[in-house]
Image (cartoon, rainbow, N blue to C red; front, side, top):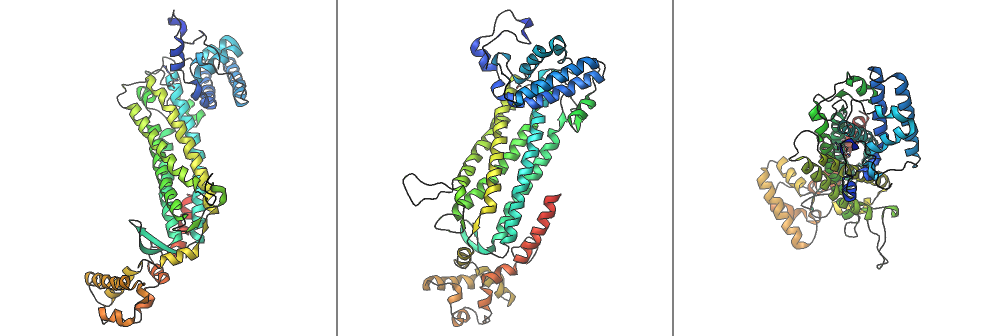
Length: 463
Ligand code: ARG
């Protein structure tokens, strides 16, 4: 960064210089320089529109576009020198433009304010980032369907209260993750629609006295439409809050998935093996292989939820229209994008390499009386009311607990002591494969249903 200078584009009204601390305190260039490509794209579209509207000559526009293009190349190459004295990305670039092409560069800011400029930049930034995130999310969703299909018939215990509940298939569990994340995709797509609205033309707050063509600017920048109200256009950050809300929810989903992976990867569960690439060791305990990646993803959900709180609180109590408070929108937004991108990448790499321990899952699926509900359903089919059936099975479980065995190890005489209608069929009813196959309806855990759901999932992913 340069030393403070007095060449402020707004310096005309001032006689005194800015306090050095205040200059640094109010500057945003240290973080908003990240917007340079979008700022320049916005400026090129603005100049093009001004020229098409007869506000700039074609020659002036050509010079401005050429200058901005050269500045972009300088930024791309990392050669642009950002100055704190020039406060933000907008004034840095404008200043560089005037330095480069002279007086005509000073015409670029006609019919524009930094207020509509920055709102445009953030929307362009977020739109581009959402598209990258959506591509990354699609890769992860595809990996989940692949995994679900591969493990469609792998039985495992399903849990409620983290107590073994009923047998399910691993593929079915993975498809539950898929559903969570597909809703996240839909939310991101919806947010993108509200992001893709053009603020430019709103000026500082009240519009401009020049005969601008906002629809042309929107078309040049790929916006779906123009913001209807100039005050709202410069003060609205709903789209950023909505994005952070969608991101926070996605991170909560990642956190829940992480928690399951951490548990499943533990010695006690032993359901999965995370690839060495995604684990680290301990500096003291030689035997350790820690699931750092899912742990970190779980941990990072906190900061994204925090950014949502920061942004929504930032807007509370702001009068219309633009206020400098809004400069505080960028860091939470940038970090949300970066954190989400990193976590998507981590999961996108980790899921395809996940080793599923089918033997351990099968053993666990059959313990903890997981087919007790199937037993009760069987009694219902014999004509016994469900509540009575529930009590009978409860008694059978008590007996098995006392004998420290599974239900399948009880003798037929034991079962018939509980109800005379019970036959040999009870033993097949208690099998986990039969239990999962029996849940054979849309949304159920039967392998055939999981395979069909995977097919549908691929179609939904393509749409
Ligand atoms: N750096 C400012 C921001 O991020 C740009 C807009 C400043 N506008 C103003 N009138 N001070 O919001």
